[in-house]
Amino acid sequence: MRQLTQRLFPSLVLAIVTACASKGVTDSTNTNATTSATSTAAVGCTYSYNAFNNSPKVNANSVATWTCSSTIRALAGNGIPDHPVTGGNFATPVGVQNINVNFPRTPTNTGGITGGQLNPGYALNSVKFDPGTAGSCASTATSTLNGGGCVAINGTDPWKLEAIGGAFAFGTDENNAHVQPNGQYHYHGMPVGLVTKQNKGTAMTLVGFAVDGFPIYARYGYSSANDATSATKVMKGSYAFKATPDAGRPSVAVFPMGTFTQDYVYTAGSGDLDECNGRTGVTPEFPNGTYHYYITDTYPYIQRCVKGKLG
Image (tube, rainbow, N blue to C red):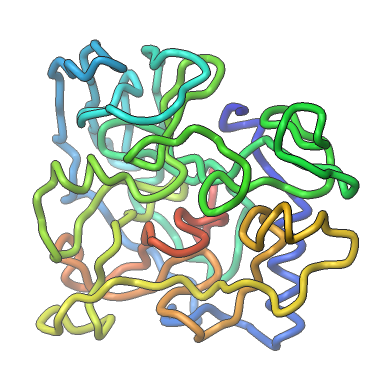
């Protein structure tokens, strides 16, 4: 796997933008059509955690502190999860990291995709959200085994491997997470242990912040985006398998649909969320409403792009 600054895929951004343009999409499902900014100053600016994680695969302190200045939300942590880690087939042990990341305290929704950010944010416990992989397969791939035409890291072939739901085993644990070669534990999908630790049940659960400063929630959202009295429901992304595999794709008999990023297509309005797995609406932390992202049980799991201004 690669670090935050090394994981941009311009081709995926172009594909998303082109797909939206071809469908006449000028804005996202359930989002505002105009640029808007939201202050997050009152939310999570004093979050601090420091405790030992005695899971056999961890055995280290989990450290995370969030603070806010007039313009910046800052995260300082060590990337160690604060929940049990029992499963998974990790190539390297979980290791302490040096996490220091700044986020805009008043994020701005541009109304359009501002980046194909495949490392789109961090969880409250300082673990990185990292939905994509650096694995790939050649068009001639015949097997997921070594020598079969696929690689798990530093892939340069055209067919981009997914960590969840495909034929290639990336060794993810019960939290849909695994470890990079440098020891960095990171989430590819629903951070089950983190959600369980928050103990919100079916209520909206804030689990972190995106690199553009907007909040990230897990699984549940209000059934009516702007009504906090409406029941919560499981949020569903607006992506599905393509009706026909792309030309040149390796065999679906060996690599079933969902193995590759290219297997999915976005259709506005088919789910609850926009192309970046977000929407505008009220949340428990933002009763006046804000743009926010969701981690979902369906693709893209964690958003693959952001809607807010970067930098």
